[in-house]
Amino acid sequence: MHLTGRVRALDSPPMAVRLKPLLALAALTLAVGLAAPAGAQQAPTLGAPETQTDTAAPPDTTSTSGGGGLKTWQEVLIFGAGVILLGGIAFAIVGDARDRTRRMSRHGTSAEAAGAAGIPHKHSQQAKQRARAKARAAKAQRRKNR
Image (cartoon, rainbow, N blue to C red):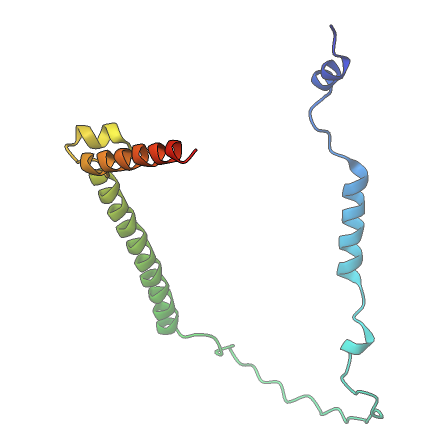
């Protein structure tokens, strides 16, 4: 018995890139990027008549050296705060991982590992015996009520 569908699937080349969807996506991106803003975004007049505004004369240009940025000590302070924040996050992650490792290794992940480590099983033998006796009694009661 020959399955032609399976043979065709195996003979087909790897997933080919389809050109039409990529061109459509590029055109959409270009159209959204170059779109003019809507009229409602120009000025919030809400139907009021337009008022004329006088344009102020540009201020005198003086040669300033652009001292409006952060000072060096401010940059150092911000950088130091970032390092301290990242260090605190790393400390919390590592501490939690160590705590989880300690708990997992103490209790074990399987019954064999727990028995080999000398850790008693979660359920005691007495509790298992009581549950089995209770199940036997319930089964006997159901037989009796038939």
